[in-house]
Image 1 (tube, rainbow, N blue to C red):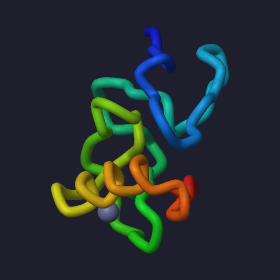
Image 2: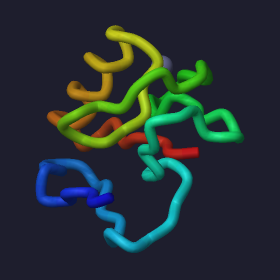
Image 3: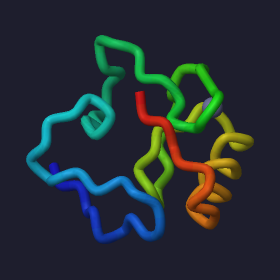
Image 4: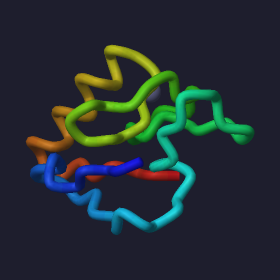
Length: 80
Ligand SMILES: [Zn+2]
C-alpha cells in the first residue's frame, strides 16, 4: 500500500508514508473504528476519501468544502 503524498497540494496534510494513522489506512474493507468526515464542522461518518487530498469525506457537499479549504488556508481541516 502506498500513499502518494505529493498529490497533496495546498493545505497541510503531510504525513509520512509509513505513519500508521487510521485516517490513512485506506483499506478495501471497512475499518473497525468509524472514521469521521475530515471537513471542519462535519461529524458524519466517512464514506470515502478525497482522491486529491486523501481527506475522509461523507458526502459530495463535504467534498466541495474540502476542496474549498484547499484553496483557502484560512479554513484549515480538522482531522479527528
Ligand atoms: Zn462531511
